[in-house]
Image 1 (cartoon, rainbow, N blue to C red):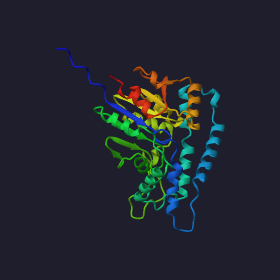
Image 2 (spheres, rainbow, N blue to C red):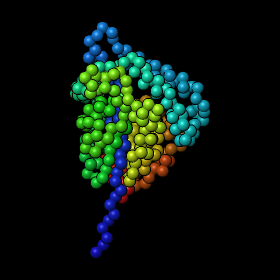
Image 3 (cartoon, rainbow, N blue to C red):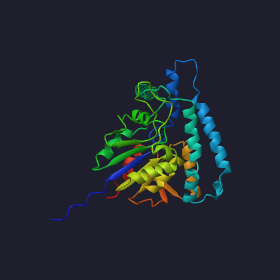
Length: 299
């Protein structure tokens, strides 16, 4: 009697949220919820206030950083640059907290706001999300982790149709509004995933840490921007989402990969090989990832 074929190793699938599972960044939609609820005469700053301040700080940091982009020709040099952006990300969070953007926000308000944003089309989840989840859940022992620098785990879960921080084998690792479930609502603060000293989920390095703490068996990471670089390179297979007309974040990641010498091939050409930190794949969407077989690898 021939021996039974060996069981494939369990799959650990890591997914970025904004721009990967959705068609675009969703922070502006999230930030608009408190303004729609505010009844006091003091208006909240628009999301553009925080976005412009962040972009200005990032531009200044990038201009001052050494070595400059043309001389960052290895993945290690680029990952060090991305990790060094942590003070910029921390300052952005502190601006949101200082403005008390989420003060008084309750979980019910957030969930209603998420449902309204999806229903109106302001936030669009990519086609194939439900099918991908069904495919992964059919693999014994598979785990799914959505890892995001977004400001709210509850928002991420609500947009994706999940209930709670972990539902049906899907874990959401992201930041959160402090006090969502309190009678008075949010305090205006955002939590720190790794505590006061460790900080929140803010950078590519943080996403890489989440991956290292959870990876096992056959690991796949799907992302769309430079903030996903450490996760993409750290898994058995990394897949970059690229729309037919690439967005700015997708183009930036493409250009970085070319500069640091990491090959990126169409996922339809995948034949079971590991990336080994030297090769990634790209896909037009979630359905193409499922068809490629990368989620069934490690057999």
